[in-house]
Length: 359
Image (cartoon, rainbow, N blue to C red):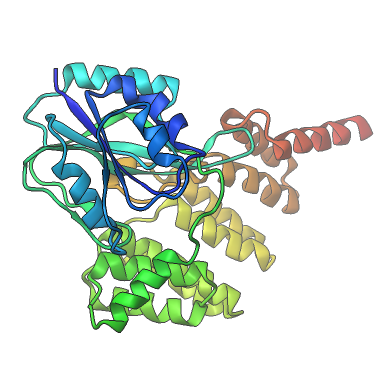
């Protein structure tokens, strides 16, 4: 059975760190906590779970801090978590099984990262991340922000997932500040960092600046296909907020130059036409979304609702607007197969029942 070092970097995480470590510390073989300058009870809480708590002077470089934490690991594999991550019951069981069965020739274990949820706790946004990395195999973290490890050697996709449960927003301007500090120093952002810089600009409502960064990123042609598609979508979001719908549409369609349609993009196109009362065209794109195959292993951001519930519930509305009530009711029931208790599903059922009663 393989051994695992949990390696964490933390700062002022007293409200979430115990929750994280209680969910995973009994599953790993050692816990390494690197503190980057806490002024609260973080170190004390970490000390309840491990004697290996270290200091690291923060340098506005997440990769440097993570590489330091990995350098302290003594087990076969390094596993990283943020303090506001947890392993749920089913994922703890799957992780334990992974430890018992993993071929030691594997270099990287990818695990799903669930980061978005609806009111019922269902996952609405997820993606795979490199979660276990073979120790002393030459792989290092890169990127001052949105840091990542480039996998080498044999890679497998695991059954366990990590759930991100943030309690509150923290450091909303930190990432953008780091990027702009790098640029001010004359540091050229590599493609992945350029892509994430564009997203930070979008989050800060600097839509013109974001478009310039995304367009340059796409025009240079050095980006990963999933980032290219996402950049097209974010250009569209920016153009919409700048009240340039035609350019938003062009940006969404541009994504098809990189790969076959993703359901997320088809749903955005459906929304674009629906908002302009072009209902048959909206129905076309929502129907196309239902034909798209979900493949989380591509590594891109995934919105699970786009592969079932969302296009179904929107098609219910579209067909109703088109006077195809029987088809609309069928689509509502198909939406219910994905989310039986969703408020729109229940509302639509009542609507169709009222039509039957009125006959």
